[in-house]
Image (spheres, rainbow over the protein chains, first blue to last red):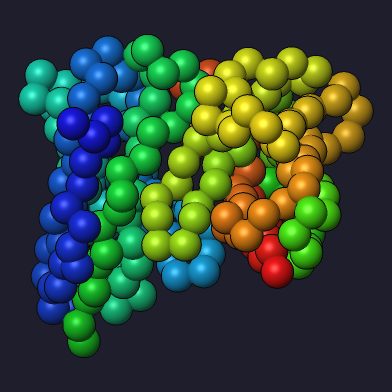
Length: 112
Length: 113
């Protein structure tokens, strides 16, 4: 079992729709959870962090964490073509110390 | 407020040469991480350092790779006797604490001919 799993996609949504990205992790004692966006040829850009169960909203982005189910998700409302990128789920803490364990990423395509 | 800086942005080396990659963390951040992204693959952790100390090098190949973060100056990732399989994007990230958010630099794209 991979430590952090994401659907690789591509996920295609029309402009203005809600994009839903999902991630599961295997280390039950993980403490910190992050979503990064990576455009092709660029570095990862942090867009959301979440540390406790529940929802966290920031603008058009909402992160959801369920530690019991070992599940993290990211919702992007009113998707724009500029949101087209690869979204990386990352987990740290627990038995892994400070390093981030990344999923393979989900490629999102927002069609005008 | 400057973010993480890495240089060079692009580096070309011939097989057998040495590559030195530099990373200056966000001002005030004492935790530095190096990650590697091979073509068409995910980001993989290599090494985690604090000033003058290697905390976790579990992701770094045992041979040819070394890292340091001296008391003064940037963190350095050194690859000796490079091979074609070392061609990748190398990213540095920094954070203010152990489980805090990590901010990434622009990366160094290494090409080995």
